[in-house]
Image (cartoon, rainbow, N blue to C red):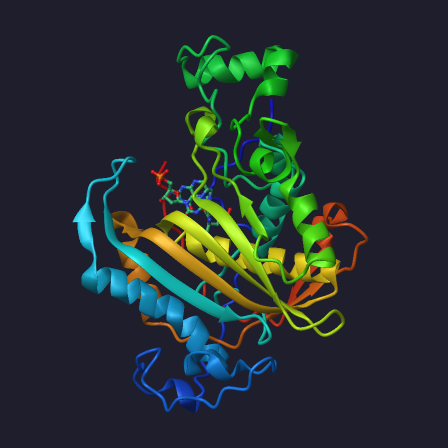
Length: 355
Ligand SMILES: Nc1nc(=O)c2c([nH]1)NC[C@@H]1CN(c3ccc(C(=O)N[C@@H](CCC(=O)O)C(=O)O)cc3)CN21
Ligand SMILES: O=c1ccn([C@H]2C[C@H](O)[C@@H](COP(=O)(O)O)O2)c(=O)[nH]1
């Protein structure tokens, strides 16, 4: 029977760290984009002159996430949701991270980078069955397979009957874990009228051959296949942007997310797109620059509020550093190509996932 550990099992060890608060962080939070004198514009010169001043401080950037959570608590409205859990939600928010200043892995709780990495590699392999993820001991998707507790005709069966089938029927066991046409299919194998499109392969080629193109878009949203997916894509599209010339160019990435589980999902999503930006930049000989998140329905589940409030009492540490082994192809990466160094973080916070 495939190994299906509980998603709430914590991996790794979370050492408690002594608090050391840099002076700059002891002051009250300032508005992120307080009015500043207009910078002198120098067209075509790669200076961060026109960006929000908050981006100059890595601490302020990670405080952005805490300010975003506080904004939802302060301005959100309570609502029932599909999962029956209930959320507090706002609509339309943006976060921006400067990737030249360390890796944007949250430090106000532990974020499980190996889980993030395995999930991204699983998308990049074009897979939509979770068996290889589960074998890698990553169980963040185990609640969503289409045939969870269903037989092959789609009829619901008990958990015991389902586990019995998996244990005794190899063909059934092999199919277990299919999520339908989710990210892997849409990124690598998007079905169109003229055949399949490998959007990632096309993106890497585009970044190398026509870096300044305005068409570096990958869409996971396939309107004709939404009904067939176990969960319609939450982060449904991203776009890349290159400034500068080959040898001295820099790469930014912006992703769109229609629905945002701000406590459990978003920290994973930030780390995942930051890692993807590093991989794409490496393939195209560019330097990672800015990472931009645009969220639609940005919510905090009501059973995460306590953990969010705990997080809001914490002060971010310096950002860690990410090392990525160079590969000839973006599709050749293995999980141990990614190492995170100097990751000082507050203790892990656990929370139930809304299914
Ligand atoms: N409600 C909901 N939120 C999500 O973020 C989410 C979904 N559903 N469905 C699909 C995927 C699965 N994702 C997940 C699922 C679980 C965790 C999670 O439990 N994270 C734990 C660590 C898990 C571990 O250590 O094993 C965490 O504390 O961040 C994170 C992202 C993101 N997505
Ligand atoms: O990468 C992900 C995937 C999922 N989520 C969250 C957002 C919502 O809380 C649920 C999806 O429910 P819908 O009813 O389909 O919106 O999963 C996330 O934050 N990040």
